[in-house]
Length: 241
Image (cartoon, rainbow, N blue to C red):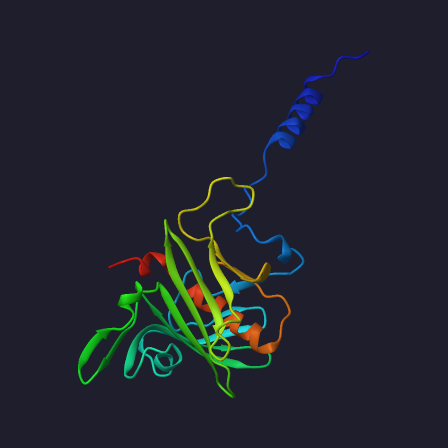
């Protein structure tokens, strides 16, 4: 049998090296409830980096008129915090296939004032990390998103219609990544569930992704608005003094 020449050996070594070289690392992905495995996620445009005043899009939803340091109007009423006005860190309009929602969000508590007196109306409740009010541009059906720090960088809360507060979806931060045993300190995203079933998920790392299974228009629009609010929310900013 003939002995392979130098070129043949070099080619074999090159092939072996190429097959042994690992492929570039896959991007980090949030661990998603298996119930959402059949749902194609929407890629997000405009969330990372966040630019106030610029639109944010995912799937058929467009988030417009994103503004920070604004003054709220209807959210004081929707959130049930009494008369007056409240400073809102950001507000936006969500435009979807069948309806549009106005959103006003507050972080680290709400400051309301009347007759020139500033009152921290939510301080006694521990200052929620995030509270949002969603109102249809046309028709009725207000919703509330509430998120509170659960310690160690974790957050939990609820999304519910004001008219039916008992019909609520739980909201929990997700810290697990696919193919990783070590949880993250800050959220990789958020999971929404009703009972034992997942109804939506939001990945906030990288460009961001949103899972929105089919649902009645009002529910799906509210979940999309919650997804937009969570994409704009910055835990590090909410935990500051």
